Image 1 (cartoon, rainbow, N blue to C red):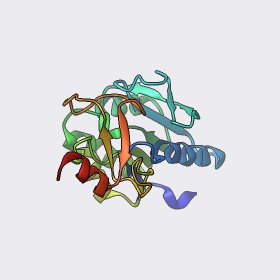
Image 2 (cartoon, rainbow, N blue to C red):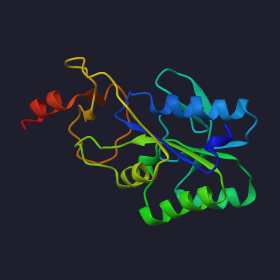
Image 3 (tube, rainbow, N blue to C red):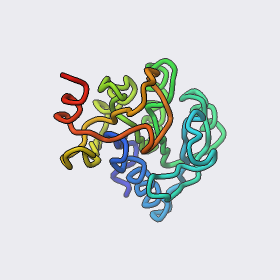
Length: 189
C-alpha cells in the first residue's frame, strides 16, 4: 500500500452512501498493512459515540474528537502517523485555507490523508472544505445512496424537517437521500 504514501483520498457523496464505511475500510486495510493510523472526528458529531466513528451499518472505529483542523495539527505534533483519517470533514468550521494548509502539511510529510464528508448540504450547496479537497484529491470517490423516492442513485441529502440551519445532526428521521430529479420535484424547481 506504499503507493498511497503522501496521497489524499477523498470519499464524498450524500448521506447513507457509504462514505464513512469506505473510510473505515481504508483505515483497516492500512492497519493490516502495518501502518500507524490515527483517525479524527469533529467534536460536533455526537450522534453515536464520542470516541468512535460509527457507520449507519453499526461498525465502528476509534477516533479522536477535535474541534477543527488546528487541533488535528496540534495533536500530530506529539504523535506520529503514517495515515490520518478524518470523518465528517464537512462539519469542521473555521478558515478553509487553514484546514487545507494542515492537509498540505501532512501530505508534504508523506503521510496519507483519508477524508470522508458530505459534498453538499441539505439545500444542494457545496461544503467549501469538501469542494476544495475534491479538486486536490489523488483518489476521489463519489458515493451514492439510493433515492428513497425512485430508487435511482441519490445526489443530495434532503432534510425532512423545517430547520433552516446549515448543519443539523441526524439520520433517517431528519434526512433522506434523493436523486436530482426527485429533489427538484420536491422543492419545486
